[in-house]
Amino acid sequence: MPIRNRVFSLVLRLGLAFVFAYAGFEKWRAASEFVEQIANYQFMPDLAPWVALLLPPIEMTASIVVLFFGARWRQAGALLMLILLLVFTAAMARAWSLGINIECGCFGKGSPSIGPLSFLRNLGLISAVMALLWMDGEPRRLNS
Image 1: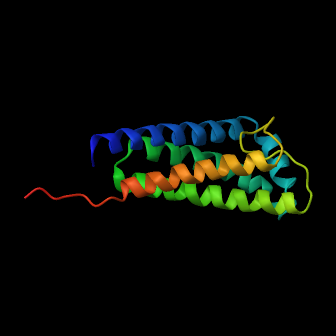
Image 2 (image 1 turned 90 degrees about the horizontal axis):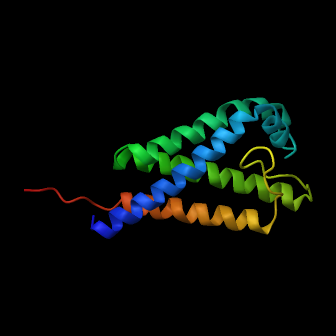
Image 3 (image 1 turned 90 degrees about the vertical axis):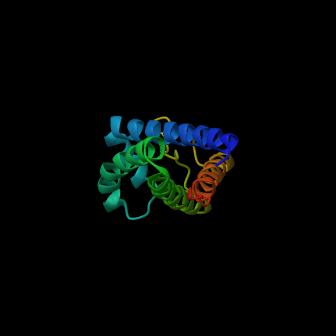
């Protein structure tokens, strides 16, 4: 991989790792409020405690893998980030289409309300993850 692609990949990894680690930590730090934020989506609210328990360590683990592991593991971590972003974006779209006015819960307590900026932010993050998946998926040359 050319040096500029390695630098760009590192910048993407640093940015995504920071966003997911920060989001996971803030959700974990205010777990009881996060349970409430998940339940406010009004989609299987009985699962909210489980989601609040599992999501923060999953986000933090994905950030560690994307930042510190080799290319194949980074792809797995980035794919996990992509899945989380797509599910979260679908949940936001559902809540927004139903007129549910709630905080997104993306960064724990005090997160912004769901709206156009939330979708733009997620689109940017999805684009960054896709770029990282593409860059780390480039074929490697074997030295003869």
